[in-house]
Length: 81
Image 1: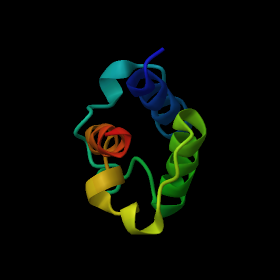
Image 2: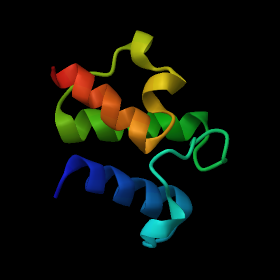
Image 3: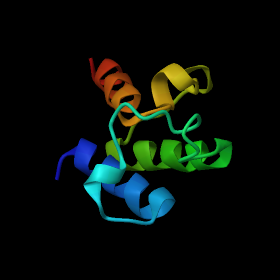
Image 4: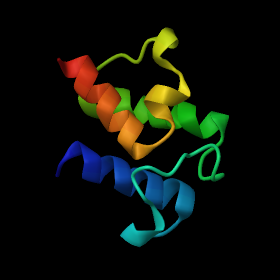
């Protein structure tokens, strides 16, 4: 299973309480749409670190990196480069 699929499933099941893929667009802002609060973002960071075995540095914990599925995918691609 791809990281994108795992991430989407994690968010759908833990924050939207559904398995319906249509409930989450990759560009939806987690914070603005109320999908995830600041505590939830920390859980997402833990998920990213556990799944990809990377460290999300404190300086990287900004909305531009972590506020949507698309932002997270771009961030982890940049980290992998």
